[in-house]
Length: 367
Image (cartoon, rainbow, N blue to C red; front, side):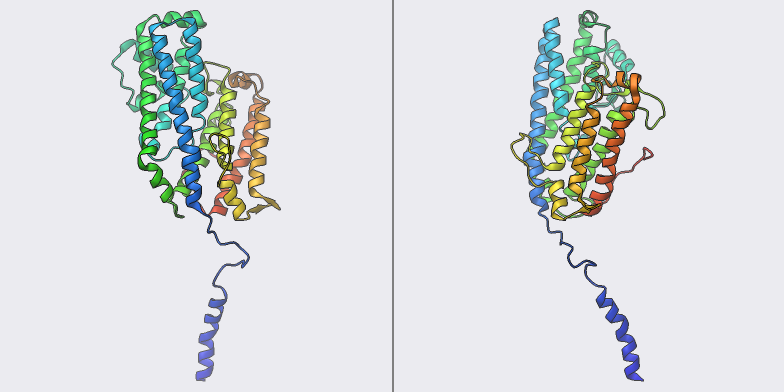
């Protein structure tokens, strides 16, 4: 009887031992070098792109000073080009809302659109404005410059006549000076110590750099690239066409260019492409490949890149002016949104599951 009782005790222990360990003995252990990937992200991608953006902003600041002293047609053209160069450079850093950028709300201060033209005009008329107030977030940044350079008159002559009023050039200078100062704060933080904090925080937890940056990347892709640039103006969430919500609304012909640059930036980061284009390093793509992540018989990284390419091919068919595209043939905008949405599933569900990263933001747009 004692032997039988001992046997009953051993049976559950036997099965407990049999169920320990990985279900699939061939499944690779995740000892991917996260710290090496973080170093590449910081040194070859994030910091160089921030430094490039800072250089473009300083150039824009210089052109603004020149225009303030001589608001001529030629100087307006140069100023507009500097603004576009800075806006294109912005597309490469918008996704990196971490560290000091997150702390100061960098993206909100730089690129909220649509802007509030009434607030801008009231600020100019009344003076005494404080651009640090949250109520002025939609009256500053790159979209506010878009309005000031293209939207305050029906043509160039009318715009230049507005700038004959020093209050307009003063506001333009103040907006750009604030952007330059905020950019310097973020760049100084990366160069002054945050880079090491970021790289050394290489664990696998919700507060680790890989987990946080991957979430920031997906948040950017889903909310700012897919929804902000395409879905919201195309009426995906509201059911109403909102052509005034496109990026670069006042300049009219740059919304497609800004979208395509943002799309390229998202794919390049996924693939670990260096800022100077000379090489690529460890990345989300190589991490997935290291884990041998397969979906429907194909590498997940390949599926993601193919979907980026499909979205780019669809986006290339759009009008340079997204507002005009929405008004004339919104179906093409919706098709672009659909191609972008397909990658949300791949990167937000399949990729995060493979990397064992949990979503850390709330999805509130109903998709």
